[in-house]
Each structure stands twice: as structure tokens, then as C-alpha cells.
Amino acid sequence: MSRAENEAYWGSTDTAPSALDNFFDEDSDVNWTGYTEHDNHSSAATSPCESVDAVVPGGQQAPTNSSITDNITLHTSTDWIVDTGSTINSSERLAKGVGKAIGEKLDSWKPPSVSIKWNTSQGQGSGSCVQCAAKDNEISQLKKRLENSYSRYNLTLPPDDTVNRILLGQPYSLECYRSHEDKLALLDAALNIMDGSAILATLLHMKITVKKSLFIKEMQVRPSASQLYVNYLKKRRNYAEAIDFLGLLGKSEDAAILSYELALSSKSPEVKMKNMKKALDNSFTDPSLSYEAKIVMDNIKLLERQMAIDQADCNDQTNPMLVKYPRAANIVDKSLLTTLFYCCMYHWDVSESHAGSPMALRKAHSFTDGQVLWTVLRGRARVNHWPLPNELDSWLGSKGLLGALGSLTSAFSGAGKVISSGIKAALPMEQVVHTLSASGAPANVLAVYISLIDSMDTRIKLAVNYKCHQAVIDVHIAQKDRDALEKYMKEIPAGSPEYLKAESALKNVKWKN
Image 1 (tube, rainbow, N blue to C red):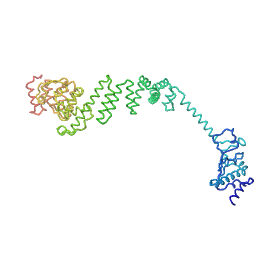
Image 2 (cartoon, rainbow, N blue to C red):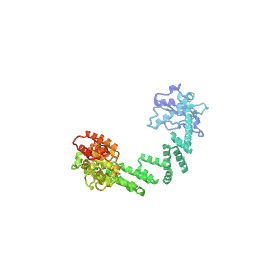
Image 3 (cartoon, rainbow, N blue to C red):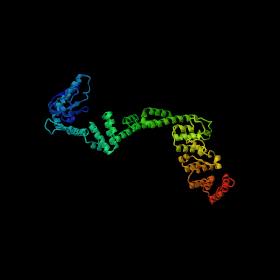
Image 4 (tube, one colour):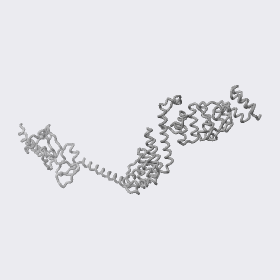
């Protein structure tokens, strides 16, 4: 049969297939558009899932009547040929003819997929989408939830309730607290429970929603909140804002210390010195910070001196101490006492014009007597030189020599001793003896320092412990104990200077027994 005959046959109104399954060929597909007669009334409400009018391949709207077949669009293989208008028109006629032919059969028959989605229980000519009804119900529920959520986040709850929500990790909103009084009440409620997270949350909310002047004013009367905010800025490394905030609070000392700490955090000595000078000019201008400004200035001077010493010593081969005792570390950026220790080791005899002069360092910086004497003793002991008390006395500002202890010879001879009381007051002599003995100091040096101890029992104990014969003899002579001296002479090598001193004492000293 030709194509024209085929179209004429199926286009006749009195022609209908004997069964629905035999009507569609293999190249046809059926699409359900979901239209009923009720959908065509303009006054009817439109459901959210209602479809647009079915369109046949020719661009014409599908016929709308009570027959369910009008909601079926038939596409055949010829429908997609758009070369000529005649082909499209024949497809339209074919679709219309089919709709008229099988109307009654499709009214009584619905595929399972259509039956699920289409409900005809409401009466002839009307239907509703069950799935659409479910969607409507879901939309209604979501709408209620949205309204409840909006109300919960926008209604102003009591501050205590909101703070408890923050504390318990529950949802909360701070946007509803709009007035200045409400924000203060919220912050105070957080401060009352002393929870850092709640305080910080309310604090940041106030910070971004009020004027800076008002924020600073309220922080001045709430030191706990201001300190927490400063810590928050430090953790975020926003040091510039933290320094500015402390300055606005009137805490110039805290702002200056923070700027000083920030300057010291640099690893490069040059950068550190530059930052300290900048901090000194910007943060230490308050007259009340004159003492702190002096400390920063001394630190700058010390760093400059250390850099000069290191530059001179790094390649110096003429200093015998540097050759004999190589440097263990760089002196730059070390403490003041470490610098003095270093200078006592390597630059003991240099003039005060030298950058490494211990005496010049002593005069340029503030030391206590104990710090100076301990550092000098340990520094010189490190290079096997043990200064006697008169040398230490010169570090305390004494004038001239104070006795016969100016040399080891006088110590051996037992000449009269005039010891500065400042040395005894500044140093614990017992600890000095232990330190000198551990560093290998000779017995005659130990005897000089043992003689500065007031307690005779402690003297004899230390002298015997460190085998310092001269100190033992001095104690027995001071106690005028002839028997103890004669007994101890048995432990002294015969003919030694200590033995000869003991023999002379036995003949010349007036003993008690």
C-alpha cells in the first residue's frame, strides 16, 4: 500500500483498530500530557504540576474535549521529517484521526502508570494528581517550618536564653538584638557565666554593630571582655589593631609591651634593632614609661655592642683566648649576663674603648653586685684564671688595694687581710668555694675564700673536705687549739710550706693548752 493510500485509510472517521495493542506500530510512542476537560476552563485554579497544552508536531494545539485520547500525542517516524510543510500537515491529520477513532477505548482503559498519577474519584471530567497533592502537602509543611524558623531567629529572646544556647551549642541568632541596651544586656549575660565562647560571640557582635567610640567606652568598664578581645586579636596575629585597641583603652603600658614583644619576635638582628627603635619612638612616648623606655634603649645598645664584638671576633686569630678556647656560639642576641661572661673569657685585659671590654660593659649597663661578681668568677674560671677578692672588689667601685690579698704570693705568706665587706655581702662564700673547687682552683685560692666565711665549723669542714691545709692551719691557729694542730700536722707532707707554717705557729703562737 502506498503512503497516500495509508493516510487515506487511517484518516477516515469510521475506521478504528480492533484492539489498542494492534494500533500502534513499532515506530510510534505515546506521551501522556495529563489534560482533562476540567483543565480547559479558564476560571479553574491551576495546580502547580499542571502541564501546558499538548502540542502536536505541526505546532498546533491538541484538541481539548472530554475524551482522554485528546491528551495523547502520537509521534511516528514520519513526524520528525520537516523537509516540507506537506509532511507536517499529514502528521497532524493522522494524529487527529487517531484521537477520534480510539476515544471510547482509552476512556475505559488506562495504563498502570496513568492510573497511579490520575485520580478520577472526584467525578466525571475532573481529576487531580496524587503526586501533586503530596507535593502540595510537603510545600505546606516546609512553609510552616520556614515560618517557625524565621520567628525563632528573629524574635528577641531573653539574653540569658541566647547565652545558654551558645553555651550548649544550639542554634542562635544575635541579629535580633538591635538596640544598644539589648547588646549590653547580652554581653553582661555572657560575662556572668564566664564562658569565653559566649563572651567572644557577643563581643564581636557589638564590635561590628556599634560605633567605635561606644565600643571602647563599654570595654573600659569591662576589663574581662577587653582582655579576651585582646587575646583574640593576638591569636589572629592582628597585632596592630591590638596595640591600637590597648592605646584607646588608656593601657599605654600594655600597648608598649606588646609592641616591644612584637619587635623581639624578628629573627634577624638588623630587623629586630629596627623594630625596637620604631617601637621606642611610637609606643614609649608616655612620660610614665620612662623606665621601660630606658630598658628598650639598653637592649638596643646591647645588640649593637654584640654585633660589633661578633664582627671583630669571628675571624680574629690574634687573640690567644679565642685560639685556645674556641667560641661555642655566636654572642649576638644573647642576654646581658651571657655577654659579660663572654667578655670576661675573651677580653679581660682590653681597654675600655674596646667593644668587648668587661668593665665598659659594666659601666654601660645596670648590674647588681651579685650578678657582676658571680659572672666574673665563672667567666674567669672558665679559662683557668681565678680572681682574688681584691680583683673582685674593684668591680664594686672600691678605690685602691685593701690589703695583702692582691696576689697569690700574699695568700701564701699569710700576711694581714683586710677584706671588703661588700664581697662577703654580695656572694655566699660557701657556694663560691664549691664553684671554684669544681673549676679546678688551687688550694691557696680556696684558702683565701674560706677565710671569708664567718663560721669556724663551716671553715674547718670545707678546708678538710677540699684538702686545703692552709685553711685548716688558719682555723686551728684562730681557735688556739695546739693539740688539734699537732694532730693535723701528721697529714701534711713534711717540708711543705703548710708544714713549715704550722711549725712556726707552734713556736710563736700563745696557745690555750
